Amino acid sequence: MDATILIIGSGSLARAISYSLALLLSRPHRVIVCARSRDQLNEIIYVSRAKAASAQSPVKFDSVEFDAESGDVGSLLSSLQPDILVNCASYYSPWEWIHQPSSWTHLLRSAGFGFTLPLQAAFAIKFAKAVAAHSRPVLFINGCYPDAVNPLLRALGLPVFCGVGNIALVAASLRSSLGLMPGQRLQVMAHHLHLYTPKPGVDEAQAWVDGKHCENVTGLLVNQRTSSGLEVNKVIGCTAAVLLRNIIDGRDVETHVPGPFGLPGGYPVHVVGARMELNLPANLSECEAIAWNERIAVADGVKILSNGNVEFGEETKLAFRQYLPRISDGFRASEIDKVTQSMLELRERLTREKVQLHKAYNT
Image 1 (cartoon, rainbow, N blue to C red):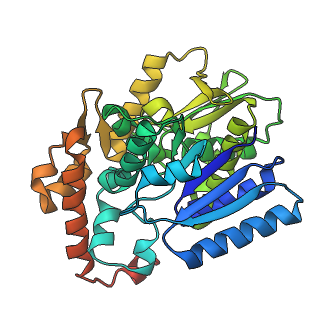
Image 2: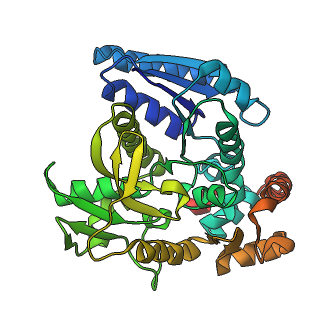
């Protein structure tokens, strides 16, 4: 039976996923992209359809105008009946510092990525709640900081299958740098933090090829880490599209995903259609793998505890202490809506305080 994939968002990740699906899908599955801008939707659907036509792929592309902030997700699910919902919408833009530098973007670049958790989580929470209340099963995949947002969803008792990107990108980069053949087995442990070179004292990503631990991971990831974010997002979109194809076609594969079942960080997994399990190296237990990712999470700026407490790393604490001191010592997952609202108010205030940092960031 052909499947319906619903992608919410119109940024570079949503586009990269849709464009990759146009070339990867060989059955008349349906891909629906939702966003509030009709002009952007028209662009995405045109390119997706044209790519599919060039490959003579039978996949069908449609679009629906939908405002993630004010729209009724329940009604959207009822009208479209998707099999998979992919969230690419958040209040955080990684490109804002390039196009609209301000005191806000300066803060984001100095506070540690964990500072963005509430902004990344808001729509994911809204969509997960709608999925939980929907009349039929929907696989929810979150593309916004899944290494930390997915554990938050789990703490709130909300459904999430996994994320996309991050460890999947690292694994693709390593497979490319190592020149691995299709039959060779690659297993990677990595967190969002490993998109970049870790600071001294923080573990590098770990990799095993055919069960043997791989050396010089840092050197193997140089090309990824020196490429621009927009270019890297094209690879992330491709890895996400491959995952979606494997799920809806019921393929039996070994791959890598961030935040599987709401776990922190990223892991190697075994996927058979919509069933997934961890696929760890023989010398690494599940408890050890989770604990390792939790240590990296602190270095990335935020850790979500199993009891629902959210804690920040030192740099992120200092940023909150300066601007939102009541949040600096963390908060309960159940308080996320209030925290997000406080951060949105802070963003509005700081974006009005324009600073001329664009030149400094590009020298």
